[in-house]
Every structure is written in C-alpha cells, then in structure tokens.
Image (cartoon, rainbow, N blue to C red; front, side, top):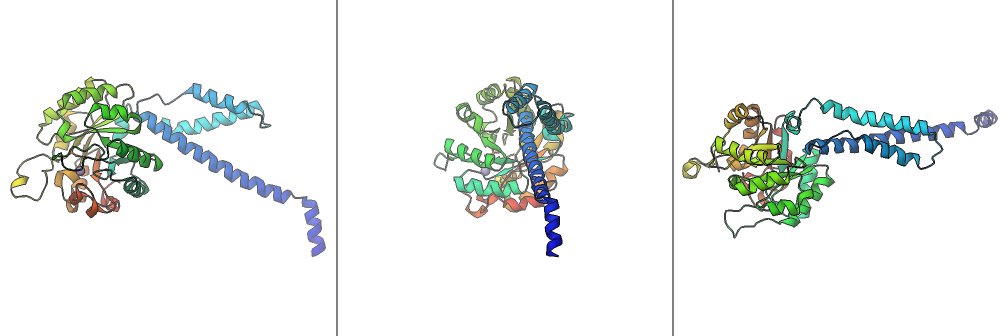
Length: 348
Ligand code: PEP
Ligand code: MN
C-alpha cells in the first residue's frame, strides 16, 4: 500500500495540492468580488439619494488604467475584459432601479424606516442602538443633536459632537444619518455628516430656515424631512414644503407627527394622530408622506399599532423613536420602544 501511494504521489507531482490552492483562491476571488459589488451598491444608493448621475465612464476608465499600470503578468486585453464584466455586474443594480424617475420615486418603492433615539446621548448609546437597528435592516438612523426643547433649561442635545457620534455610528453600520437642525448654520457646519436633514414641527413656519435649507441642499438634492407643525393646516404644511422645493431641492419628505386638539384636557395621548391626513396628502401631492407614531401618541405601548395603521393607510415610511433602554432615555422616555419591537411592524 505504501508503495502504491508513493507512486501516485510521484505521478501527482503536487498537482493535487496546487489544485487545492486554486480552489481556495477562486473562493477568495469570488468573496472579494462580492465585497466589491456591495461597496459599489452603496455608492449607487448614495448617488441616487443625492440625485447625482450614477454611470461614470471616466471613473471606469481610470480604474482600468490604474490596474494596467501595474504589471501583474496578465494581458491588457484580459484586464480590460475582466473589469468590464465587473462594471456590468455592478450596473445591474442601477438598471434595476432606473425605472424610478427620481430620488423620491426610489424612496417610495418601499416604506422607509427611520429609527433611533429621541436624542444622541453618548457615543456608546448611539452605537448600541445603531447596531440593533442595522441588524434589523433599518437604513436610516435618527438622533436628535440640536433639540428644540420647550424649556431652555431642558437638555438641548450634544450639538456638533452629537452629529459626529450619529454620523460615525451610521457609517459604521452602513446607515444614513438623520438629524434635526434649528438653524441653517448647523447644517452648513455639519453638511457632510448629515445625510438627511430634519426640520421639526416647531420650525415648520421658520420660513427663513426653509429657504436656507432649500438653497443649501439644492446642488446635491440632499433629502429633507419636513415635519408638520402641530397646529398647521395641511395647506400650510404643503406651502412650507413649497419653500424648500422653490429654493431648488425637490427631495422633500413630508412627515406627519400628530396635531394638537383636546389631548391636554382628558387624554393620555401627547398629540392626536393625524392618520387620515396620509390619505389626503397623497391625494394632494406626489411627495412621499411618512408618519411619526412616537410623537403623535407619546406612549410606547401604542407605537406599534399606530405605525401599522399608518402603513395600512399608505404611508411611505415611518419615523420611530427607539432606545436600547427606553426607560432610561434622556428625553421622551415614555414613547421610546426597543429596536426589536420594530419586528412587529408590517413590511419592516
Ligand atoms: C423629533 O422628531 O425629534 C421631534 C422633536 O419631533 P417634532 O418636531 O415632531 O416634535
Ligand atoms: Mn422626541
């Protein structure tokens, strides 16, 4: 037996081992190609969110030239063909999306979920929450950084530092950062760290802010979530959105968040959920309409059901306050839910 094996080994001349090497390299190659495609998909997504042109033949040329400038012992024609195949595979993702005429159509294809804490409390807190949310497939990470508090003595948020923590947590978990700004300068200072700008209910009639945000975001079409003033009529809400549109940014998402009626007298609700306004807004505008159940009801035990109701009524998405330890939320503890509770929401 010994003798026969040795003969085989000699005949084999190590070929089996070399083939094992090839098989391993092939798997690694495919794994790398798959990683490359995932990165390229992320770029396409970001470009669409910014209304930037997706196809870039100059960039493709540059990649091939850079690769050809190093001698890997491969023919130029092989390197050329190989990269063209890779580019085609990456572009399939874009062609799948191309039927959407605009960024907003792209957003409207599937309800979007914006979730995260009322306020960014610390680097650790936002990272814990981002990690649970991204594991659930949530792509938009909200977190208040410049908080519009009713009392000047309440915690106002971490400001620029909060934006930094939010943005780093979002990037680390492959998510987009969403935060409210109260002044145009806050957006200017943190422009690249804020992926989606939120204009809060209390700022809906700050027309100077609306114009400035519209102008600042006109070039790249950064998404703006505009929340309904809690005492605003639908017409006033739409006119507020018009300020941003007319300043040059078409990418506005309307967010209903409850209106003020008689809750303060005998109800446990924080505001009255303006759910049927989803139907009417969708009749009156093509802009996506999302719903914030958290501020609407102000009670964590009602958040999931109101969210599902909003989706049933055709909401294009939700914005939900989530915290890993709701009772310990620094702000709005009564309405925070655990990230895992989002699993009870339709279409997550
Ligand atoms: C918020 O979403 O953080 C917020 C303050 O909500 P609103 O502006 O609707 O009160
Ligand atoms: Mn809040």
